[in-house]
Image 1 (cartoon, helix red, strand yellow):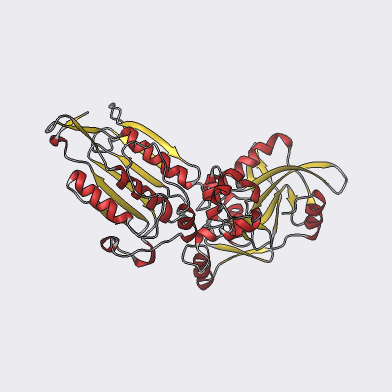
Image 2 (tube, rainbow, N blue to C red; image 1 turned 180 degrees about the vertical axis):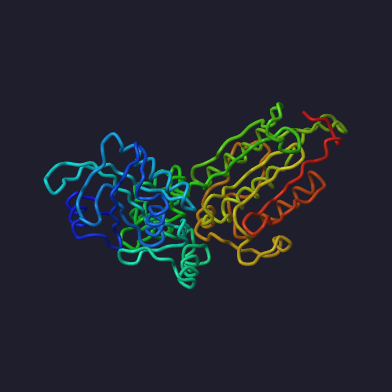
Length: 426
């Protein structure tokens, strides 16, 4: 927005608008004293909750003139902006910050900081409340307007969350190697037609084709730039509990953050479990090794997590926890469409239709120890995943998996290992 200096200067001379905020910067020694941090947080959050905008620091709103920022204090201003966006706005903002030279009315080139905020996928809370931009002012959103905005920017809208446009992403972020794999042998469609049919791109409000959330999650090498918590945090622990901080015993055996396209996340999460789980040796009929967990059940649980989690919840990630006696997998979001844990075996429902359709085109990973499944792709439409999780877990450990909601924002699946006394740990 306002990408050329001439366009930006023309807008500055016209004054503040729905898309432009101007602020002179004051200092106390080397620290920013003005604008107040809370005020700037309110302005930037209002842009994110509306249609985006630009704040130029180093310009007088009253005079509509470039007054500049001392060069040796530019770092301080950028740090101030970073603090405002990450600490005073929830969920945090991801600004585009540029340092620019702009001419004053006398022709002198002065340094300013341009902060661009794109229309957000989320609704942001700042110190002044839930604000939006109306002309050149920020205003508190009326309750009915706020309710509609939450609905529009959540998975419950008619255009589901995974179909929403990522407004600050371009088609160039989608890797050809990643989206070409979804092309059928007979398809001759050029890129934009193919990606539109797959619902990996869509026209944004600015009329430009941009990636959707599903496109970023499946065809960007790492979608965390736009969805920072779209990854799996995997940890293998020693024993059956998380030790308190300060204990000298090393209780984490392995830990990794698994990112990338969702099918890659499934692959790496299953490999993490296969690598870190124990093997039990049974000697009734000669030595027979059994895995600590049934990998087909683990596979189904991980696929369900990445396919059905609520990506509209900012700040929450899939968490995989491996203990001596159980595997826990936490998935952000409540169950979709009023589902309850007790009827998961009998009712099918999908929160992310586009992601599910794309995962249904991805082959099951090969070469993972102990993973034996008749499935050819990560998702199917027969609803057999839950049955496999329950039956295979019962067969191996004698205990059914447990499903429960934690509050209203996280879903926990627990798969139990066989009792240790049934064999020797290998």
